[in-house]
Image 1 (cartoon, rainbow, N blue to C red):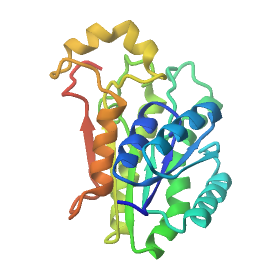
Image 2 (cartoon, helix red, strand yellow; image 1 turned 90 degrees about the vertical axis):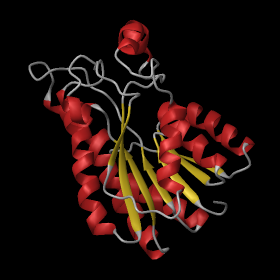
Image 3 (tube, rainbow, N blue to C red; image 1 turned 180 degrees about the horizontal axis):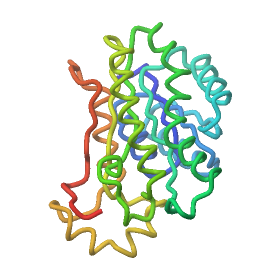
Image 4 (cartoon, helix red, strand yellow; image 1 turned 90 degrees about the horizontal axis):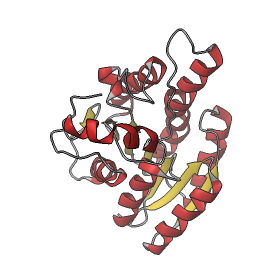
Length: 248
């Protein structure tokens, strides 16, 4: 997979960092998009140590205009876009009686609209270059509602469910040259989720068939498979990766 380029939004840490590492180990160059500059710099250095080119682009993924600028800059530098991983996201623990309109809008913008922003910007380049792969990060909560999880009240679940509908529709629109799929992680140990996992880790593990919490590396390997497997006959699908979890 040398001389190929993957964009990873929310790539500075957590699941995004795991995805970037997995793709870099396959030989893909990586463009990281995030707001967290120090964390992006750390991840960039780790990727370069794996022998690939890595660049960082600071951006609020909710901004349509900024997405267009970032993707144009990436294409200008690398000359191609082969893989887009829409990983950026944020939780919102507030319920329907306490959330504000601005908080709801922000949750939808960061989790769902960001996927639209980056697909809208990247797809023309991918189509012109002969195709590619898109993987968008949904959540187990898109299926379950996840009402007891710290990050998964209704606004988050609604945004993540929207990614599944977008994925199915765009699979029809972008095929046959671009394959697009979604991933639905269960409880994953990340910097953002540590409050939840530390407080409820033992309880959660009792409700997971494989007896442990997931890791960014687990998700990264699935992303890497969907982004690189050949021959490919998979598109428009969503993949649950949760160790078979029945406690949310």
